Amino acid sequence: MRTLFGIPVSPGIAIGKAFVLAAEGFRIPEQTVSSSACESELQRFRHAVEIAKEEIVVNRESTKTALGQAFADIFEVQLQLLMEPKLLGEMEDLIRTCYFSAEHSITVVMQKYMDTFRQIENSYIAEKINDLRDIEKRLLRLLLGAKRETFDQLSSPVILTATNLTPSETANLDKRFVLGIVTEHGGAGGHTAILAAALEIPCIVGAGEFLNAVDGGDTLITDANTGCIVIRPNEETLVKYRLIRDTESIRITDLDAYRDLPAVTRDGTAISICANIEFPYEAENALQRGADGIGLFRTEFLYLTRNDDPSEEEHFAAYKHVGEIMKGKPVIIRTFDFGDDKTADRFTSVAEHNPALGMRGVRLALKRWAIFRCQLRAILRASIYGDLRIMFPLISTVKEFRQAKRTAIAEVMDELREADIPFNERIPIGMMVEVPSAVVMIDKFALDADFFSIGTNDLTQYTMAVDRGNSNVNHLFHPEDPAVLRMIRRTVSVANRYKRPVSLCGQLGSGLFNVVTLLGLGLRTISCAPHNMMQIKRICREVSIEECRTIAREALGMSAAKDIQDYVKNSLQKFAPALFAVQE
Ligand code: PEP
Ligand code: MG
Image: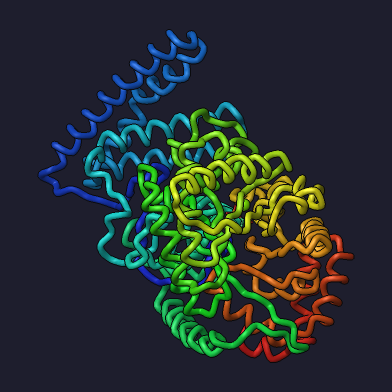
């Protein structure tokens, strides 16, 4: 049994068999072959090594022509490694003496060398690890080729373990077969984390390197309430976790009582609790949990779950569906926000060194007019089927907002009018406040934008200069940071002054206790992950606005996120002790 810890990002406890994916999506189970198949396995292995060498020679020659000898030498090093008798000999020995499959032998030997090299602090050696990793991937690709196993064809429930998952891979997971997710990399604010929560799959990211300690089929416990992962648990631990898992499901059912109760504070202030959704089918789930509206519909996942772009009719059907399901409650549709971690090759024409600061969000939309126009037409056409609103992501200048609203939307509206296609002429058009420049200039934006929604995930990333999806800097990623809270305070107070509705849809709102700080800062609409709505409602009903103001005032005066987290929790324990009978 081995225990390790990562960053819990989607709560719950999962117990099941591991499905192991290597960096490129290959499965590395401990596979053996029969003694009679040993010779043909050796042939398979040697054949793959020969093809790999040929491929490397081709790469070396084309690199030499394009970039010169110095760059071609990179491949020369790999070629030498693939001719290294000791390395190849060890792999062949495993096939011959342990009857391991060629794939498993490669993985075992490569991992052993990489582990040894990792102990040595030397940049030359660090490069060698990359070369070994590259060779390993090449050999596995050649060996597994067409029979590469993908997790979109799972047929029995597993816990998915991987180096990392992209948001589109996560979006494509089949919930019936993925009990839990554990990744080596990734941070709390990344989109993989957000999607796992949307799919309500217990998920832990940033667990550090552990894949070489797990084999496909090993039993795993994923305690995504605390971030604890147990590999090959003993019987006593299994019994303990099964009990916690079963008790938890009772607690979740208890909360159902809050579904039809309004989120009204003890002193009678009505709070609107809306849902963030990524897929149209979630609208139903949100409504059933008592959502007052959809505060954020992240439409990019309509594109990322497929290899081509949705047609205007497909967009239209999705928005009409959500508008109708929500029965006149507000639905904020955010236009696509590709870029950074949420992207597919077809949206990035050039590789960017710094994609979070590059062509993403509304910047990309304004450049890719055909895709943007198609989406805008569909939203406007669907606007007569519900209270739909349009929101632009990653707005950083007033000019950009005006281009999107006055040029792009105005043009599409003209087209629809000319074609006599009905739409809501007064559809509210707002923006995400998720870039520090938008906060600083919020008074100027208030002259053009019909509403604001604060995106604390990106606002934290850009304010603190911390990559939201990078586990190395996760200790610095705190949306409760006083710097971020001060940005929220300014946005809310200016929006109120200009009488512009303002809500918050970043993950800060889903962190249960934070709601009191947010109410204290003046917010009255919070949009969060659907599975958190009832708990947040419950907290709202236990506190008064005066208590929330006191908490927010104190928090704003502190200098560290950690102090704020502790202070808010302690204050709630004092003001609303009833909450803790269930929370603790
Ligand atoms: C945010 O940045 O807080 C936000 C809600 O948008 P996303 O997480 O999709 O970037
Ligand atoms: Mg964002």
